[in-house]
Amino acid sequence: MAQVWHDLLFAHWPVEAATLRAAIPPPLALDLFDGQAWVGVVPFRMSGVQLRLLPLAAPWLSAFPELNVRTYVTGPGGARPGVFFHSLDAGNPVAVAVARRWYHLPYFFARMGCRRVGDWISYTSRRAHPGAPPADFVGQYRPTGPAFRSAPGSLEEWLTERYCLYAADRRGRVYRGDIAHARWPLQPAEAELHFDTLVGQHGIRLPDTAPLLHFARRLAIRAWTLASVEET
Image (cartoon, rainbow, N blue to C red):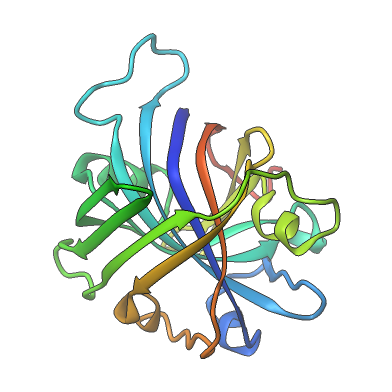
């Protein structure tokens, strides 16, 4: 699958590893940076979402906002660092249904808005998925400096340069999906964010400190079909 991500904010907080480990299905392991676990809240919008063998993206499916809550894990034996999603909210119900069924990801349909207001990105999300716990997000964010590529071995690289995701189905079977893209063109950022229910429903308590913020204007992504971690 091909897609393009726009106007993305990485908002990251250090958290106690013990609060996250119970949510990570074996054989995955929580990944740590200098002994510290991290949680990210990532709002952005997608465009050009399509199967790579098709010449055109379906206009009713190819562009919508997405908001995810994530942490970072490694595969069996500590291999292949990747992303593990606690939840993903998206503004397209068809895309949500497909992702839940075929990618085993905890997607939820939400009423969402993402627009530029001067230098700012104004972003709202209210979950509307039947039977799902409520989750709201209201925020605005903007870049505050020039783009840069993260330095090798830095925290910025560890948080953002990850090239696979992990998911578990209802039977507890774990899958990996590989992702390819250029290195993130990160920019420092500022933000005003409000989203207590979005993170709190996962039993995650964020510290009373300012998040580490990075903005990215645009990045093209390629993603492959999931495979069982027993087969990769």
